[in-house]
Length: 251
Image 1 (tube, rainbow, N blue to C red):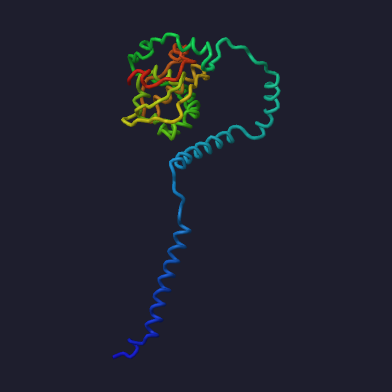
Image 2 (cartoon, one colour; image 1 turned 90 degrees about the vertical axis):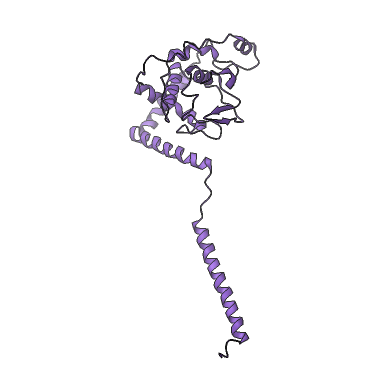
């Protein structure tokens, strides 16, 4: 029999060598985990990546077409024109103060008949690429809530594949001119955000028609174009209270 097998000193030393080996192994794992760990990726970070990539592309395109020297040289002339400009009177302000007699008068006005606006075109007319470019530029404002690719976000429902986007044109125009609050169901999912969509009526009829045409023909959507005349026909909606789904025509 080996006389070292029952030696308590050898047993004691072996025990502590085992403990030491385990601790060294655990320490190595902890060091590897510490240097290889990554912060958790939130939905906001995922969306921000796309925005930063788009921002970098825009800045790169601007730098390629307009140098810093050209911008600096144009600033004095632009500033001089701004200082010399005078405010122009408007007959119909686009923003109406809630609770005023003007707001009450507008809210009580009869609703516009949207039947003619929502008539489907007799043929699939081609979309003007120039209109799509204008709409794409205008959509930068919308993307803050609805996502760069219409995927939706923390305060805006998705536009990609939305039945509301491809539905009656009057819905989209009225939502832009009056805003929308309360729950809305898109592709079978109900969205009810704490912050309602505000009215965005300050753009021209052409700009509103362009951005709605862009949305209706992007992100997998395919629908007829929106015409400036259709937006103009609903301009009387401006100043009325925000819409709810009950106010809209079902898609």
